[in-house]
Length: 243
Image (cartoon, rainbow, N blue to C red; front, side, top):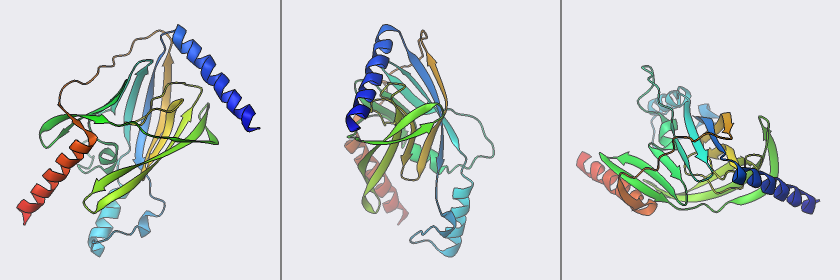
């Protein structure tokens, strides 16, 4: 049974790769991003007073969903927020913070162009090591398979493990996805990063259309580890000035 499933997957990949090699395929995906809490009213927050906890939960409940666009071709992809003017939007948006500001670009490597503390950076993001599973579900008209990975991040409280679940489809054999997540055998249509959830709302595939994908070149080139060190130093510097 397992052999039959593997052979089916290989046939799908080979057939679609052949199509993509003979035609100039490209595509566009619109994702909706939101933060998801199963039992938000009973959320435990250390170090908060009752009022602070109540205010923060109210803020979480009123977070606006945001939309993002992924443009991709055989050679490259770019992911960024679809900006729109909303006078009622809160200045503090946990969704935007969780996704990350700036532009994510993928080709031979992954770059994240982001402005921090008045300075523009071009961050080289390392590749992910995915664990593929046979678990599947249907998203729209596409059969998707589950893949998982995890990354270690540094916070003000120390190091933490961030779990990521991706659902990708072999029916669109491009190894791209939202944010910096890529490298799977098919396009990622749904991704959960801790409490952040990104879902594909709309998918457009083009057989003969060149999309405007420009590789970001401006900004100080740093590794992800170097960038995290810069952010921590600025954070602690601000904290020292407050005391």
